[in-house]
Image 1 (cartoon, rainbow, N blue to C red):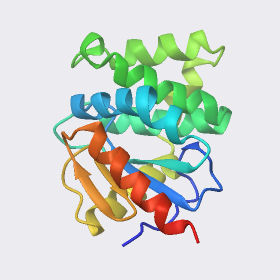
Image 2: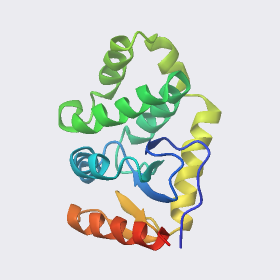
Image 3: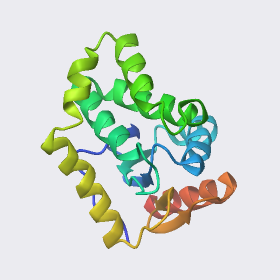
Image 4: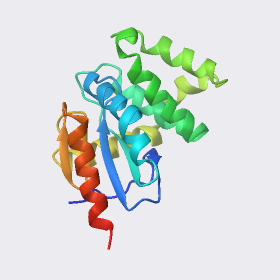
Length: 181
């Protein structure tokens, strides 16, 4: 079952591609950070022109700042989709450095580094529209049976939490083959 295309979800790769890889992620999730590395090191270089990698927010309750991070990423998307994707990438790369209590400082530093007023970013954390976008992704994930992150759907085939990148590559290649005449 193919996932519906989201109007708000950040996309890497080719947004017009027939094949979409849907990624339900939590920006505080260590397994999501591992998948982020797979995406940057293997999947995007190999499939960037042929596949849309669509990020959906699925902040888990056990992660104290994951929801705030998802809302902040949505705010950064209103500034620039590239800034939003960079925020996702940088945040996941520094989960250990941020720790349980360092998210606010991380958010402020990221905003300043991109000449974005930290007060506007902090105010955006209370923005009902941005929170609703995150909640919509979360509800969509729950409706699809998502319970863990990352959950990656390749043409409906799920990859959950920890998995070899080679398995995802094979699944994408099969999906691409199915679109060829």
